[in-house]
Structures are given as C-alpha cells and as structure tokens.
Length: 235
Length: 296
Image 1 (cartoon, rainbow over the protein chains, first blue to last red):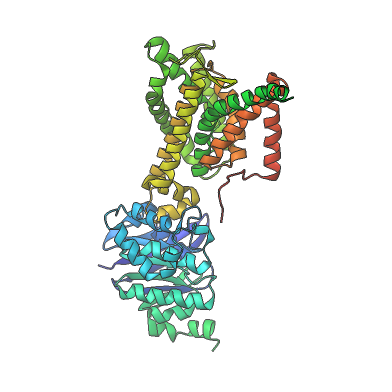
Image 2 (image 1 turned 180 degrees about the vertical axis):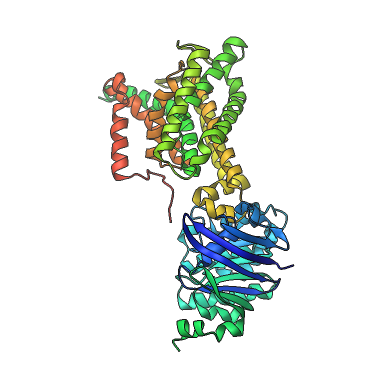
C-alpha cells in the first residue's frame, strides 16, 4: 500500500476548480515532486492532503487509511508534517518554543530533549538563535526553523511547499542540501516547487498545469520532458 | 514651606494609592478581555457581565450561605469558566479569527441576555458582600487604605502573575501563544485549535469571575455593573496593548490612578473623562498600545 495515494482529487474554491482529477502515489523513502507554475494547483493539493481545504471529489489515503475529512491537527498527528508556503513561523514564540510546540502537537513529550538536540545538530544556526523570537529570523533561518519543526517528530511524510521561495541562491542551496540529508535519514518527502532544479533530489514526480496532471513519471523522464526543457532551460 | 508642600502632596499620594489598589482589580478584569482578543480575535463585550456574575457569586456566598466572599473565589472562577466555555461553544466559535461586526453584535446581545437574567434572578437593587476585611482601614504613614481593597489588589496581582506563568511556562501556554500567532500553522503542527480556544476562553471568563468576586467586597453590584465596567476594560487593554497580559494589567492600574487623580483634582463625577480622551489618543496614534503584540 502506498505511503500516500491521491486518487481523482479535485479541489474547488467556490465555483473555481483549482485541482481537477489529479492522481499520483508514492512509496516510503521516495522524494516525490509536484512541479508546476503559479496557479497550477500544487499548494491546493498539499492543503487538501492536510485537511485545510475539503476535497470536491476523489480521495487521499495514507497506507490505506483515508485522510479526507480529518482536521489538520489530526493529519499532523498521523505523521504527516506540512511546512506551508511562506514558512509561517510563530513570531511571538522563541525559536526553541517554535520547535517545542510541534512536540506538544504530536503529544510526544518523552523524547523532546533528544529530538531538539538533533534538530540543533542538523541546523546549528537555530541553536545560536534559540532564545530569539521567531519574527526576528531571516528568511533562510525561518525555513530552517519551519523544516526543523516539521522533522522534530520524525514524520512519516514531510510535505514542503516551495521551501526555496524568496531565499537567496546560497540559502536555497543550503536548504536543498539539508533536504537531501533529511532524505538520507529515510524520511519520505513530498516537495512542491516551481524550480525544476529540485528534480535533482527527486525519485519521481508529476508536472501540473492548470490543475491537471500534464506528465507523471521518473525523475529522468521529467527532466527530459518537453515541458521542463521549454519552461526552465529555454531550449 | 516643607509642611505646606507635604500637606499638598498627601491628597495626591492618597489618590495614587487608591488608584493603584482599584486599578489592580481593573487589571485582572482586563487581562481576561485581552486574552480572548489576543488568542481568538474575539472582542467580548459580555466580559463585564461575567464580572457582574462573579460579584453575585460573592453576594450569594455571603448572604445565602454566610460564607466570606473571599472563600468563594475558586467557585466563582469555576462557574464563570464553565459559563465561558458554553458561550464559546454556542456563540463565539464561529467567529474565531475575525472580530467582525456580527461578532460584536453577538457579544453585545449575549451581554444583554446575561443582564436580563441577572435582573430577574437577583433584582435591580444594588447588593454588596463585605468580606471579613470590610470596613477596616490600614494606615500607611499619612495615607490610609481599605483593607478589603488591599486584599483584592493582592489577589489580582497573584492571579495576573499566575496567568503570565501559565502562558510563558507551560505546554498549554505555548500552544495558546502559537494559536494566537497563526491558527492554521498551529493546526499543521498538530495542535487542536478548538481545544486550545475553548480552554483559553474559559480561563478568560474565569478571571472575570474572580475579578467580580474580589470587587464586590468593597463595591456594590447591580445587573448593569458589568456594562459600566466594560469601558475600563477596553481602555486598559487598548492602552496596555491588545493581547498583552502584562500590558492590560498595567493599563488597569493606569486607569485606576487616572480616575482617582481626576476625582481628587477635578470632580469624581467626571473621573472617566480623561480616560476616554486617552483612549482616542491611543487609537489614533498608538493603536498597538504600550505592550502590543509583536507582529511579523
């Protein structure tokens, strides 16, 4: 059974269909990419998986368990961590508290200290800034914090919505390097990106256009596709 | 010369002392109001009516059961917290995150219902419930203070410190602050916003109950008392900073002092006038107040 399976999913805001009949599935250990331009429906798919918007049609299952209809906090407690677009740190909580709330959310109080140490080892810059308020961090630091918060509980699935958005090239490279390291720890990742360079990390993925699946396949197939070549490489 | 100056300063010192003592209870009343706004963006115009019910809890304890109103504080907290949770579930849940006109009207309507019920149950007459400290005065050098007010002030300060400690130091408090910052992101890390909101709202209302019960030891209650206290809570919270617990408490102190100084220097019937002027000044020039929430 797939770690995550999306079948015939449609998402609508009022009368406007943002996602139409999208299907994909992936297994444990994969890095699955949803690639597409602005408005292709990538974020809506993630928000639907997390229970933030209802599905108009279709189903989302994880290991055979249906996720549609669960509240976002229930999806999170089922081991699916979603780092939303724009990172969404808690500005009035310190960096450490920002990380700690994800334990509280996951009701994993026993291993809190150990996991906190692991996150600090993973993102040393966060350790330096642990007493600062979340609102004072730079964009890259906020991304680290958001990713750190998401990996605190060793999720089954880490979903990232454009983690490189608005970051400097250096920072964005650092974030992708850290993602590769998270993956090496055997965490499955669902990555939403506009930037085709993220395919380097991917095992498989889909290309979305206007809410529909344009192409679905292995990394190489996507990299060689007409769409990626035209849109991103200017060939 | 020195004696003359002293004689002039004593009334000022007396007004400051009385203002701080009254203001502490205003502060306790205001932190609950501020909490509901800071966490849920709910402007609870019925907050004062829960203070009024807290006052009646003291009256009933004292007149019906012969118990000192101060001993009724835990019961008052519990009853108003339950009433608050019910209000949240029935009325305010649908308005979380949006202080809309509808939400304001719902709160005002709820307040009117609570006042009507009080009118029917307790009657329109003013009632009081002096505690064991009632009518006693403490001399502090040339100044004096009512013992009941000193006790009420101490209770208010202890409650405020407890709430701050709860919000800063506990898992629940961190969750509340996370929900206050970003309810959606809080849900995404696994926090149940519904559970946190209802408990935070219950706490806010329980604090109103405590504020009422300590206030009735020196200040009589009638069914319109809550409504007449609301401007103070609004002004204290605006000056202190909406959503800031500490700020609202100091805002309450400030309101008490301004009232007493105005009453001493000008006219006690006009003691709230400078507060309204300050409210307008703050809304126009510093709407985040002195201790306002940091925003991104």
